[in-house]
Image: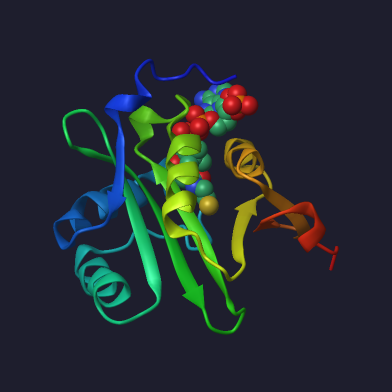
Length: 165
Ligand SMILES: CC(C)(COP(=O)(O)OP(=O)(O)OC[C@H]1O[C@@H](n2cnc3c(N)ncnc32)[C@H](O)[C@@H]1OP(=O)(O)O)[C@@H](O)C(=O)NCCC(=O)NCCS
């Protein structure tokens, strides 16, 4: 078991606000976080700013939740972005580097899934070496249904839903 943060009740999950943009950008751009993403490049602020606005504050079908600590500071985010081609949501999660390994990723994913409650499939694409992330998703009812040289592909939902592709 992870060394859990003593008081998870001090943490809170809510939908994202425009004002959260910078903090999300900082968490996303931490070198140890971005090495796990499909695009590991550092994202310039200007690009992030317009992307964030379009993604979560236009009519697009994308949803983002943030995790706040007891001082109302953002320590993580969980995004569900609709992929038209795949006809499913793709989930991406990150916890601020200083707060990883304390049970917060698990808490944020579980709370975000409860709030999001999508009827469409939710997909997670996880680098094979990212063991912590795989654990967090598996604990939250995601199952591996496909893999390639780089990634595992997990879908959210009951076992019966899955057939190996
Ligand atoms: C992946 C990520 C969201 C997980 O969140 P987290 O808060 O660090 O994970 P948790 O503390 O909830 O722990 C998850 C599991 O991994 C294990 N774990 C996490 N960090 C660990 C560490 N430093 N050492 C040993 N085990 C660790 C925990 O033991 C736990 O498993 P358990 O409950 O069976 O013991 C977070 O590490 C992160 O932001 N990583 C960078 C970005 C990323 O990889 N995102 C995922 C791509 S979709």
